[in-house]
Length: 364
Ligand SMILES: [Zn+2]
Ligand SMILES: [Zn+2]
Image (cartoon, rainbow, N blue to C red; front, side, top):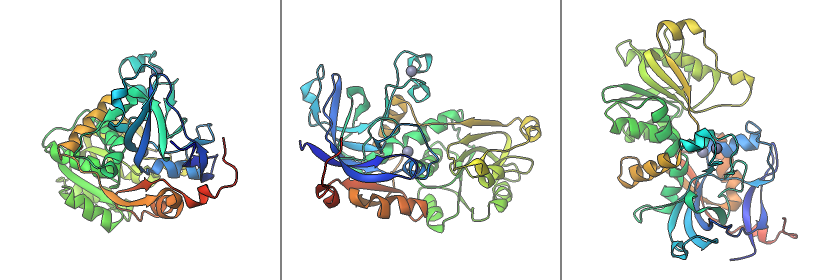
């Protein structure tokens, strides 16, 4: 292994750089994964624009990484070297009540959270505890496996937060890229009627290909509730997954005449920057329609295992927009996510960076 590698590093609000850092080594109980594919998520954009500020910098970003184990630490079977794996990005404290229940995503004292407060997978190598490296079936390419780590597993978890999806229910997926793609397919597979809402025609076309029954143009959020109601005989959706998180999109879901029906469950998955995008709803419609609003964050280790199985079985297909080199992460990655110019995931699958090699002094 080379002593240095290129990595996408977060240095604080608005400061994301591709630079050279020291290659990690395996800790006791851990492994080093040579990353073959790492997907970009809105999360990296949230870091870049300051929406997410977790107070830890500099760190390597990236929480959707797939690759091959190249070394193991003390106590780990050397037979794992060469194993194809997907990284699970939470490592809880293993002591709190949430961790005991397997809900590491709620742990208040995480040992690590890769790509958030610990060095993540947008780099040639990542070091993780052995239990965070989950075996991948040989049928999955790395580029199509990487988005399982967040894009699919977040959907699997959100479906559970909705209280499950029953056959015959109407499920609205508001915002159809990444997590939304997985939710459309998951709801379809469970026998639900699926309504996809998106502003981009390309996103609606993809949602249709993936199984959405009804397509709603979300260009003008004030028309969405009526369109959803019209397609549900006036009842509104049983479940809405809100993957956008803007005030007007959340607003379209709730209130009298909103897209959510009686006893409906609204699952908040997306968020946007600033007080302009807080969630507002008078309690009366929630009360008299007995609606439920829940948040959903990340996924458990079991959710990720289930997500791998769903993709391996062909129930959910990951959608890859493009594959890029690490040096292009701004121009061909984050800027295209910001502009909603991608359909599916942008995946980094080349980790050499000419600019980093030429970098005068290696950092840390
Ligand atoms: Zn993500
Ligand atoms: Zn914990």
